[in-house]
Length: 589
Image 1 (cartoon, rainbow, N blue to C red):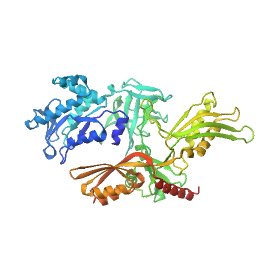
Image 2: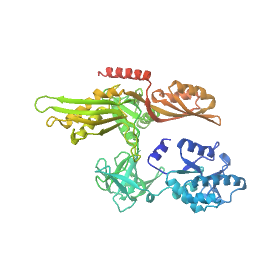
Image 3: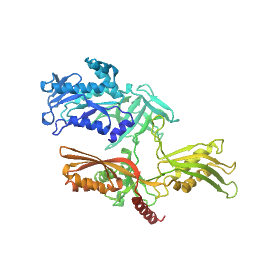
Image 4: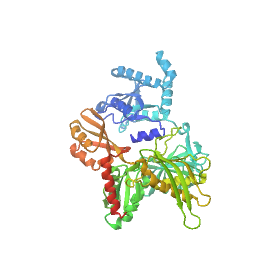
């Protein structure tokens, strides 16, 4: 589901492949319905499977109406034959369904079907390609990757339907003006632009996976990291084939290669010119859980630090920072299991024993109503003083996308509607800076503030005493004084939990979810297995992996991902605030 959201966010066309058709319990037709329901995409089978499980013999291409068999020890020999008689009726039914689905994307195909004429194979391929690249349709293929059954037709479909670099428009942001786009062309003669999208630690140093969008890079070239401005030498370029590497002297637009020995983070842009452009980094959700980690032996502190820095480079969702109040090292991530894996990797790979603190939930504070402010900051200390005056209001953010459909910042939005020069334009950024400086600690329990919109529509200034610092201080104090008038509430991360278990364990597991303040979203039973989808506050999920194993005698499994931030019930909020106050008192604040 997370990958699906990323693909939709970045408008990535996709194909679907139902694997393990040779395993007992293969159910391709039910999976197609699941994909439609859970991912919300229009899809249909492009191949009809011949058998399933141990009887899986191959598939029938619904476009060409040919049976495809895979022979040889590794399925490397592909044989095409006529459709077996026992599948003729089903092939006719599913081919008609496929054509009806595709006809929704082509008037020409629709007219042929209405006149009961047979469309050409070339037209079906053409319509499928257009529908896939328009991100409206997902063709579904079947096979068994382990035995190389169906892999060759799938690769042919990737080449035939998905866009090549020549068919896509990639735009970067100009370095000196991020509001301006710079269209990148897959032309080896243009200036080089590439993105480091994945970092892997290698026995011989860091291995950086790089996608080349424009230009060409040769072994030994010096390229600029667009974020740091540092020049890095690409001394070794390799093409990766699973765990095998192939040395190469160059890479050009469209290639994905790995670079040995450069020091960078995932999502950074490289170019042949300094301050040239930046590519849009992958969307990274903010962490929802954090724990403190301390090495049992002080001698292992350096090794722990080295491990944490490596993991932070490899995984953008993994954060490391020091708590200013307690001086502890804090790691933050997307869930309890996410952090448990990294703690275990430090123990296994670096031989460092850690003491792990209790998990802490990343709560947020958010306004619930509009509140006006009229705040004046005056300070006279001999000589020139400080004077700033701002008028406006705070309100909850209601708009999450702009007119172009682009996502807006939902943490803090600032608008100024000042007319007549009541506050000079050069002081406006200082007001915004002041608000941003203090929203890290809200008035309820000093958690970060989100969903706040600040609008300034009036004010005044002094010719001598007004300054950037004065307006920044004015905004900071205005927030501290008036934000509480918005009646802020605590928000907590709520996780989407999907559980699979034998149906006779459904009762205890459902009851346990409800006791954790969970809400059951959907329950589905199939072949003796119950699939439960629920939304549960993160604070109530700690230790759930152990609990579900106990309730299901080791037969239940679950996945968990962030669904949304939601309001904390009043009774729970009181307990959270009381616990936070104890921590602050203990820290001497």
